[in-house]
Length: 383
Ligand SMILES: [Zn+2]
Image (cartoon, rainbow, N blue to C red; front, side):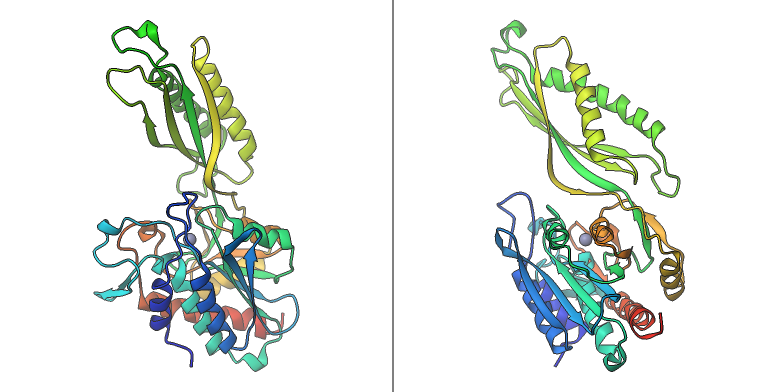
């Protein structure tokens, strides 16, 4: 028998699936994939678990129910971000209920989605399906997007419409910014602190670079703007600085890690190129050398579905208009596979990626109803 939604969530939270570009934190997602695969099979889906190329510990799940090609894809990622165990009130891998909230790593982002999606299918009169339901579970969305990239590589036709169940408070999201990380490494030469002429201080170089990057941030904000976003300009965040070893040595090397969020229509490659020029110019005349490299996670910007009818249908079921978001998702990949895609799920993105992440049972219940209504609309009713 299919477990209750709360019980599903308990089991999914109990199966750790951290993904991280840092090998020390990176884990397999097979536990979560196997749970969802088992439940989907019980509902009559034909299920494929496909290991990512060269990564046996990581897999995507592709489950189909019904025949044809033009169905509705319900998609979620199976991994979570890493966590700070000592900043959680309770064990992040044990679903804990307090004040109507269900706490656990990945409750909102986004294991709760699978409980809602599976129960929406359970509620569907499956004998009446005219078009298929496809349930997707991807690997490594929080780190490399390798799961989504493997789907692109396979080039399989998955359906016509797609919903990605990231936490949006059940308000459809039709457009989002892109994000990528860059690390700037500045290299100087060490020497005795008593005489600056004995070395080249990398921190002095970084200070010049920082100034230049701050002005560049304003320039690019003036050049690119989309008022549909809460933060209409691209953003550049100085996230981490490290370097040096001792006050009495000239700092030979330091790094600055940046998070850049760009608008649909902007090219990531062009932004990196510009950054490189800005830093080169700032360091001109000095004895530093530098490197700029992209690190870890990134997501392309997503410009939204072209099928206005799809957006309207989802808006009418949700009872609210589609908005934009500042966080990245797998939507650009699904769009590349030809899917009309919106992002819609239970929970609040504001509680994701931090200690004491939670979702409410009421939100999961509401998501279940909304998904069931959209399955009816796109898989049962005449097109
Ligand atoms: Zn997510």
